[in-house]
Amino acid sequence: MTETIATAHTIDLEIMRLYQIDAFADAPFTGNPAAVCLLGDRDVDAQWMQHVAAEMNLSETAFLRKDGDDWSLRWFTPSVEVAPCGHATLACAHALHEERLLPPDGIVRFHTKSGVLTTRQGGELIEMDFPAKKAEPAAPVEGLIEALGVHPVRVSRNEFDYLLEMANEEDVRTMQPDHAVLRHVHVRGVIVTSRASTGGFDFISRFFAPGSGIDEDPVTGSAHCALGPYWAQRLGKRELMAYQASTRGGAVRVTVNGDRVGLGGRAVTVLRGELRL
Image 1 (tube, one colour):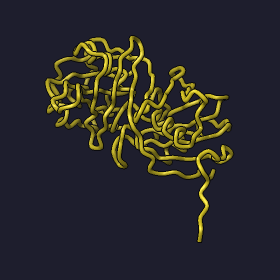
Image 2 (tube, one colour; image 1 turned 90 degrees about the vertical axis):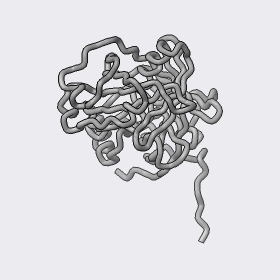
Image 3 (cartoon, rainbow, N blue to C red; image 1 turned 120 degrees about the horizontal axis):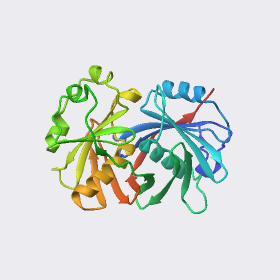
Image 4 (cartoon, rainbow, N blue to C red; image 1 turned 120 degrees about the vertical axis):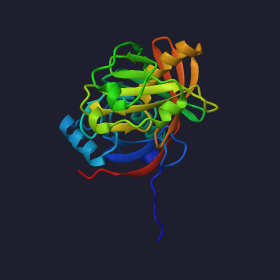
């Protein structure tokens, strides 16, 4: 029996397409998985999107709605709406590239709660343009250090998250937070980082997001909006290679351009289907 498969450029926007994509990954089952729901021109409410995100039960589910040549983009964890989300934005750009739903100039423009974000294909990487999130020295919130079980050499904070620098890569890789305690600490997210001793990388990190219902995120684009400026200043270079040392792990190319940060990564589609609701 011969099966007919529609080519990418004939995709019907009347059908809600649903994808699961591993972002910041060059092979399946690595990097950070995100769901992408292609809404076409449908206007759906936030509660419906939250239900879908809870059903997908991934760290983020992204919803794309057509807006002229651009796209409206929102991100949800299984429990709350968030902004911004780098790996889910990368997943969205990857889905649109695969389905050939790009504007003539190849630059995808997303209208989000964090302003207009753009992506473009740059060789093997999808490159994203995000606002920098500079961290300033700060005292840790009560209970944070105890919950993480670490001894940082520096503590900083930006508008969203705490950033803790450790003495070496081994300290970052081997730390074992008490997640049950961390969930009761009043923080959205915690970035733990150090200079890299692994060849080919400038710094490594891990990211914990108790305020968003995520114990540990596999690879976090938004964290690198803070890590980029932080390490660019300390290392005296604007182009850096980063590795997020979660169980799945993933590499991010970071370029600091004043008050903007460029994030580059690959992505792999592992599931494509239709949302029947």
